[in-house]
Amino acid sequence: MELTRADGTPLRVLVVDDEVNIAELISMALRYEGFEVAAAHTGSKAVSAAKSFRPDAVVLDMMLPDFDGLEVLRKIRSHSPNVAVLFLTARDAVEDRVTGLTAGGDDYVTKPFSLEEVVARLRALLRRSGAAAERTSSALVVGDLTLDEDSHEVTRGGQEISLTATEFELLRYLMRNPKRVLSKAQILDRVWNYDFGGQANVVELYISYLRKKIDAGRQPMIHTMRGAGYVLKPTT
Image (cartoon, rainbow, N blue to C red; front, side):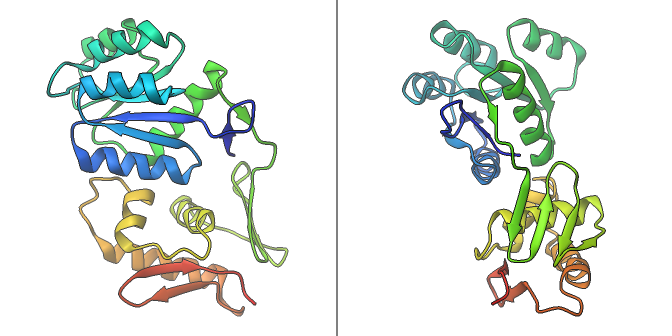
């Protein structure tokens, strides 16, 4: 279900991580969820970006090259006291969690994490903070294919289709990007953990599973674009 501000505009999220590839993956995942996203890779740039971008939430790495996430949080909260903060950290020690949350962080995710976990935690934070207004429809519709993000029910042409959790996430990603070619790398980054290791054959495997359930005996909706990736298109 998509979250927006009360006026219907997208919620804004600032992603702060000195590892550029991680910041880009998180930013990409959040954009696909409908958020407006900005990124920063140092504490000082994060503080200035927060002033100009005015985010509703910050995904904030604890370890930054210039000053740590706690200092970034203090500086941002000095002018944006209500912004929701989700800490990222490579350390799983109890005292780090306590320190981060005592300093005003709202939640905590330990690396390595899945992008789905980050998105889910952030959505929960934004609901709790009151920044988000939920849209009433939870259904994605492409042609005669319907996916309900709340009930996890999937139908094609009115016929119910049973999917595993991973098949559901893969189909949801395809349906959120209809007619858009998605590379194996993009699908891996979005549906599996960012540190999965690039096993592109798992994407081929799950695409074949989906085809057997979605396209079997029907006009195909999932298409392979040789050398480019996969695309979901409504039938004509």
